[in-house]
Image (cartoon, rainbow, N blue to C red; front, side):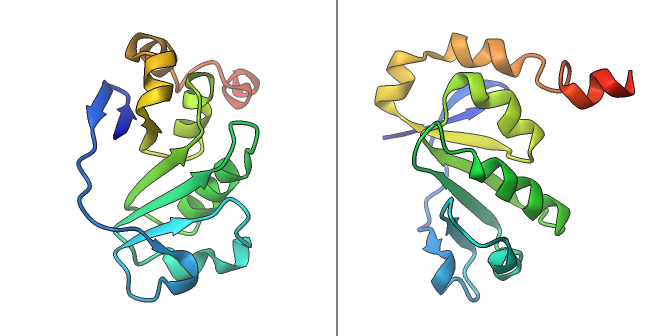
Length: 134
């Protein structure tokens, strides 16, 4: 079962649709973008209502870049980081444009809601750019 992490904590999955791979995305309302997607292909996803960006490993940060690029391209819909995102990455996920993180039950058991809440509480502060702007 999928657990959704937002600024308010854990929630059950509330999306009932099917994510269509980006390669087949024309006209789809829910799209799954792999982490190795060529940024030039992102405009194909902009008409979707919800986009999930896959994180095959917590060490693979390409999804953060893809999320930021989607937002810069004007995507206003629901943007989800899906897969192996750990609680220490929550602030980065939010800063790069994600609305939520989807994790599995095993990760939720190892990193309970309280750990995620600690990272969610102040995700807008304490980033490098905010310190530089000062």
